[in-house]
Length: 257
Image (cartoon, rainbow, N blue to C red; front, side):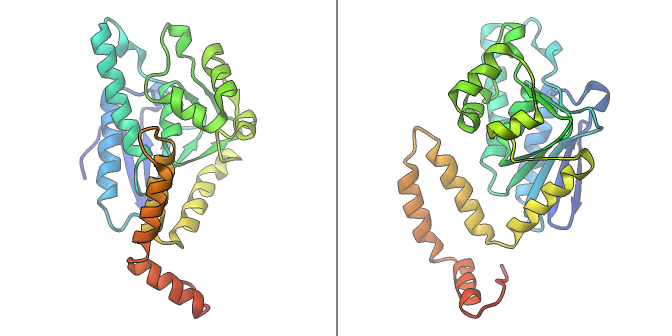
């Protein structure tokens, strides 16, 4: 696996934890850090021993407190568009990962940091976590997919409230709005993520990857999610996981995927 300067990767059992390791900068996202995250996820996807991932930030203050704004200075319109395209490529890598990724939001998740969490499949927040998209305060809008993914999770009204005011919300509000799946004590948030992944590991990896693909397709205006569901459902019948799952059910035992 590549040697990274801004992130740490720790593998325990079937879970790889990616930690953004810029604690003194509140784990702010530089262009280099974003690309390291992307390369790490792609590398882990090729590791057959790893079935799922956790993404978190170093320290207790921040998951990711935003992008490194100093990198935005002096950019032209074309360079700004390229910056957004590069960010989308990173977020899409997480969003479409066939292996589930759980974000552990252990503090501030702002701007690009919240967009990073939104690109994960599930989100577990600490009680102290604060989330927001403050880009309008800088004269820009979220550019790494946040306008779309936040709306998918919380609806148009709440998404516009967050984006247009630029205000942070508490983990309690985030849970109520559907932005995060669970809120836990800070010391227990990663344990909850591990528990969720271990539940998934009892199921078929093939079926989980298919489910991620089909759910994502249903949110893509350029795809017919219903048709992809039909196709994927049919293909599942040819998999060894399906044969094992049905045999285990009929034999009243746990499947061995």
